Amino acid sequence: MQEILDHLASLSNESTYAHNTKYGATNQYGVKLGDIRQVAKSTKKDKQLAISLWETGIADAQLLATLIVNPKQLSLDEVDEMVRTINFSQVADWFSAYLLKDRTDKRLLYDQWIESDNKWAQRAAWNLLSGFIARNTENINLDVILKDIEKNMSSAAPEIQWTMNTALAQIGIHHEAYREQALSIGEKLGVYRDYPVSKGCTSPFAPIWINEMVSRKNNKA
Image (cartoon, rainbow, N blue to C red; front, side, top):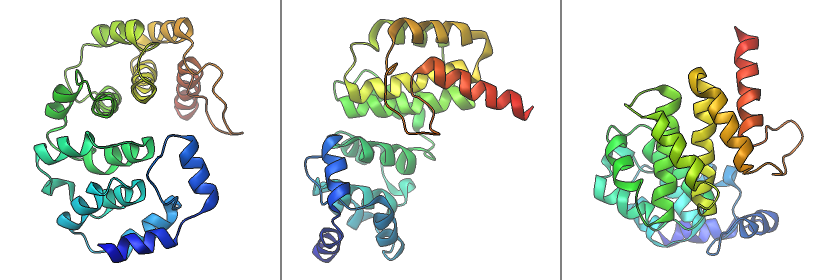
């Protein structure tokens, strides 16, 4: 494993390090995501290696770990232990995208994490919920979810607020009967109203996000 860590360290990029630091990374080498993907391509799938890399707490090593393990080989307890040691949003995003997306026990994990006192577990739960909403794959009470968002999103920890906002947008995008309510809540709360976005990117402010995606869907129809 040390050889891999040394290789990651050698790929450190000053601008990536600065960017990651700005967004909360405290233990990192600052490796570009594309370079981490290249390292993963030359590394065999290995559950134990992935767990060892994850346990270093180094963001780049944890990102690599998500790419070199078969998520089906991870037990419910192992996944639970992993989510509780996340400390950087990019790691949280890859954890959800690569380790949770195709698991068959997503609803169990959601139920376990949604009321957790660990912010990264809650973030993952809201991320899972967004998938349920978009694909309409679980029995989700949208009235209850919208009330929760309206009551708690403004005061939620930033790590949780981001995926709560995603859930709000997914309700408005995929469930026409709740669209006006989602838009109204987004306007009322104003979360991410002034969030800076690059040219050509869609704002995370829920009303803008919802209207943009609905417009795209309608144009394709």
